[in-house]
Length: 291
Image 1 (spheres, rainbow, N blue to C red):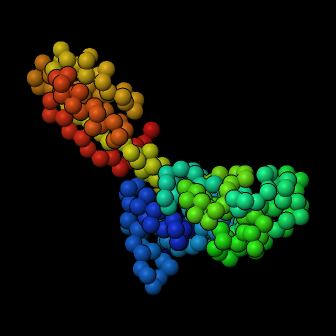
Image 2 (cartoon, one colour):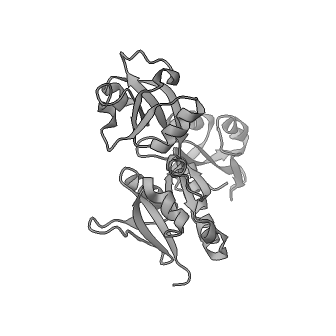
């Protein structure tokens, strides 16, 4: 097919979070446990499950036209790709993940300079070496195949590890010495693919839908009927994404008011809106918010 976009979906910890984001953006991803080729409800897209650590390299080489991966892995692999959009979501939270330098609680290490000549275990060796070079520290960065948190102090003096909440670090009696890098998920594209008119439009459209789905997180729509003589009072109660929309009704004594607001404040606002005179109050979920 001349119009076919090869899209990399991150396998592993980000897989389900990615599928949920795509669902809210209007794309249905279906995974088969025996296949690395998820199906999607778009005949112009072919998906492939790839580990996030490898995604940037395959996009750079043109094996994939585009893919989702962390900015940290773009930095780690030094891949030359085009970052189309920043998509702030992860497997646990809706914030960036952090790569941090950690040592045991009882370690004498206070700063990275105290690790001169020491051994540091990490999955992101390139990232760690670059960080050490920036600080003028010569230390031995070793690749860790997993269970990195348990390696200090016997197998390593320190680790550079990714964390979202810090709970695993605390559980292993580790403390953070410094932050190495903050990272968020990115939609990346191959330079040659992104230079093609059709593929660029396809990728940009996808980015718009994914960003809209993220922007809608934690927000709901609210609509209500308000007597004209109560409108000013009701409007003062409404925080809005922009400004509430006010529309006339068949009954000239009433108007329709609609707005978008944070879901967390709805339970506090609705009783006050009703007391102010609003009627027929309807709350509804949002899938996408497009600026």
